[in-house]
Image (cartoon, rainbow, N blue to C red; front, top):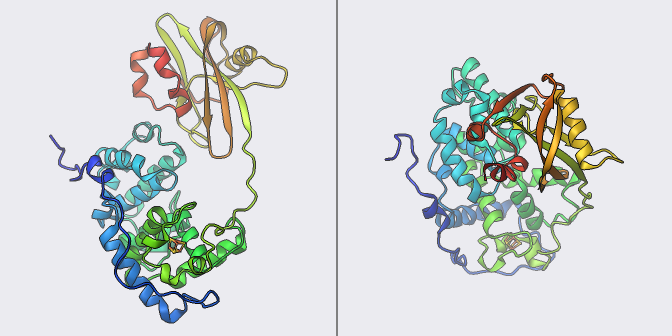
Length: 393
Ligand code: SF4
C-alpha cells in the first residue's frame, strides 16, 4: 500500500517515455552566417518557441509536478552531480523518509546519510541537513523566498539558489548548469573554453539576458531540458531543436566545435589498503569525522600505501595508527577500484584477525564491533560497498 506521502508516479512510467519527435511548430528559416541570430528584438520569439516545445516534450519528472520549494530544493541538489535516472528512486525515497523540512531537520545525520547512501557527494546531504535545521530553527520552517537569504544557507551556491528561487518562487534568476552553459555557448557562438572565468561570466550574462522574467521557472527548466535531451554534447539533434532558428553554432555549422574544451587535468590514482578485522563473530568499523570527503560515513580502517610499502604493510600500519590495534592478516579479500571527482583509488582489502591492543581513535571519531547482519544499518562509501557482499558470502 502506498504511504500517504507517496508521489503518484512510477519510475517505470517516467523512464519509458516516448522518444522526442522533431519540433514542428513553424517553418525553419535560414539566416546568414554573420547575422546576429539572437538580437534583443528576437528574444521574445525565442522564449515562446522554447517554452512551447518544453510544454509538449518535457520528460514527466516528479519534481516538475510540484511547486513545493522543499521538494524542488531536494531534487536540484540531487541532480547537481547525478543522472536523472538514478535520482528518480533516490528522490522518491528521500521524500518518503523526510516529507517536510521539519522532518529532515529532526532526523539524525546518520539516518540522512543512510537514505543518501551510494549516491555519492555526501557533502550535499550533510549541507541539506544543516540547512534544514537552520530553516526549521530560525525561519519557522519556511524556505526564504529571497535569493540573498536563501543563498546564505549551507550548500546553496549560484545554481541551487537560482533553480529553487526561479522554479519554487518564480524569481527572475537564470540557471546555468552544465547543459545550459553548452546551449548558451552554441546559441551565442562563445568559442573560448567554458572553464575560463571570462567565458563563464559571458555565459551568465547571456543567460540572464535571455531569461523570461515572466516565467523564469518554466524557462529555466526548458533550457535545462533542451541541453539534456536535444543539444547533446557530441550529437546535438539540431533538426529536432525548437530554437535552431536562433542558433549561431547551427547556422555556422559549428555545433561540434562549441563549446571549446580547455585543457583537462589528468586524474591521479592512489593506492590504498583496508582491513576487515575479525574478532570472534564481529568485525570492526570506524566512523569518519563529520566534515570533508565522505564525512560522517562508516568504513573499514585503512589508508594510503606509502612509497616502498607493500599493501599488507600499509594495512597493518594504518590499522595501528588509526585504532591502535595489532592484527594479523589472514588472506587478501579482493581489490576494488573507485573514481571520485578529482582522483581515483585502487584499494587492496585484507581479512585480518585481531591480535592485541585496546582501541584508541586517531582520525576516526567513533567505532563499533558489529556482526555482518548489522552492516546494513550503517552508511558506507561506495568503495566499501564494492566488497561488503564478499563478506556476507
Ligand atoms: Fe544545440 Fe543544435 Fe539547437 Fe543549436 S540548433 S541549440 S546546437 S541543438
